[in-house]
Image 1 (tube, rainbow, N blue to C red):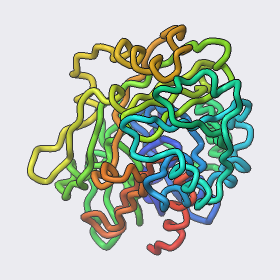
Image 2: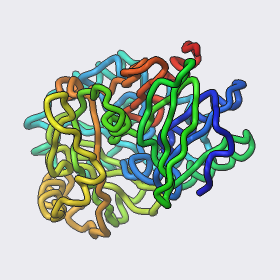
Image 3: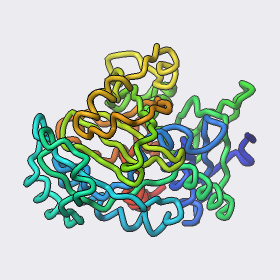
Image 4: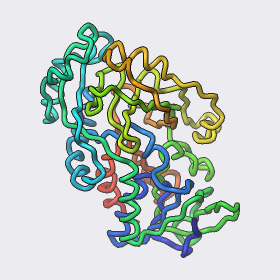
Length: 376
């Protein structure tokens, strides 16, 4: 932790997850003078780490062709740029459930064909692991996982090479218009002391806390849905060590390699969320991280375990390691079609205060394209 070195900057980025870091470095390498403020001691500690680490290639969104196409466009770019942070030595299988699925196997195949992604019948070694009574069909696709620890190391190196200034263990606690133009920002340091800096633009990339700076500044909230979620980490049987399986498309689950820990992660549509709440203008703002600390947590692993072995019987032999808990934030509209649109709300309550949230790591390329089109 260190205090800002200057009292004026071109841009201030709030949030040191992958999006915040990437945007800050992008701005620096394009002639801007940015500063990044992160409330944790280190980078990529929350949502950038606590997720299934899937590098999407569109296969996950058969009910949103727009989201699928955006993934297809971003996938090869992310793989090329972060090749050393990507794990690809496993088979990724998408299987379609017979009961409660919102798509059929044929519809899923047609969707993959329509967005132009690789999709072929799963080989027998995988198909034999599935319960034919509950699974209509299964397909091999081309999707990978990213190692968020390696990604953090890579981004820190890029920060140093570009000369990006970052301040950790500090929070933006108020944003207002500055006299004479620009934005005035109050930053609270770990010792409780506060400083003021000025900047031309702010990019708020705080994901589940995206409304916190707005609330602290007396600005209108963005309507968002939050879920307190549990992702289980498993030691899977040997037959699945190099396999990821996602059951489509409804109240099912996905199990796939989780590179930072050398295990598999399990996300279950029905049991991963423990509770939910909404940011709305009619209620006091609820800080997601503070609320998360107050919750009494009892793992849903027993429920997940009973369900996943119905579809993939060999998963009954999985060994539970532990669980990762985090707040997942989505746009309420995404609940209808499972899409993952980007939130890019420009001039959010104040001129040049921009709020950004992407549901997938490869959304970053669409975001920087939008940023390049914004003036001072």
